[in-house]
Length: 249
Image 1 (cartoon, helix red, strand yellow):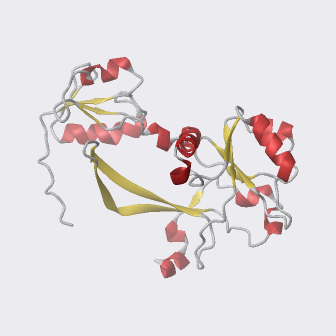
Image 2 (tube, helix red, strand yellow):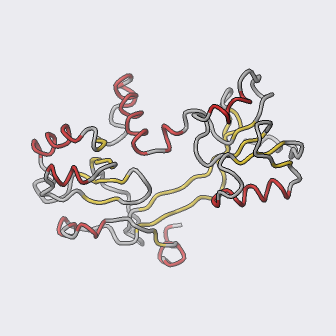
Image 3 (cartoon, rainbow, N blue to C red):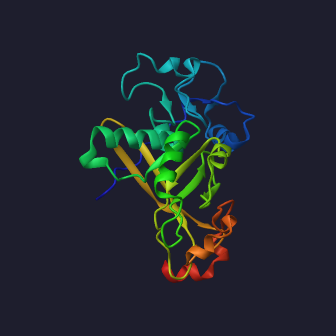
């Protein structure tokens, strides 16, 4: 379908960085606003707010939004409620609530997940009933840090003390990953989307995407998981260091 013509760039906006101009991750955004001729402020009278974290819990930041009409008020680079999808622990709770409310639609969409330390007891009982590995030795569970990276296989002899040491983590049922023949490593895709309207919902998907590969090949047999570190994703392998990837593009 033919896309709508882009809106004219507005330079009459008063721009504010929520975390301040010295916040390193947002420095390029602040410089871009200045180069476009926007007035930059740290005061309350802004018309365009750019925030690294979700700003909705900061009453001083969102005060200008109150009472504004849809499409006529200040502009914010966050959509309310998006954190429920962006953070692993919140996504797990959100997915479970959807499955409970609409089981015919959402049950089984997300792997079985336990949030530690809150659901430590339930996870310990689950492991006691079926074990951390199947009859062939394949691990059943992964532990994931609630922050970035930190994905590990749950060892078959995981004790309750070990689970307790995984503070601020998720333990999720392992699902056999999709692997490319040329690069048999776990990977994910980062898709960039511009959400220009919520009501009506209007989103644009950028043509460019980010592909991230694990730093080691996925084990071809249960014995490959003997060393826990063999599946740790502490860093990603740049695609330019994986020439065989071109065969699957």
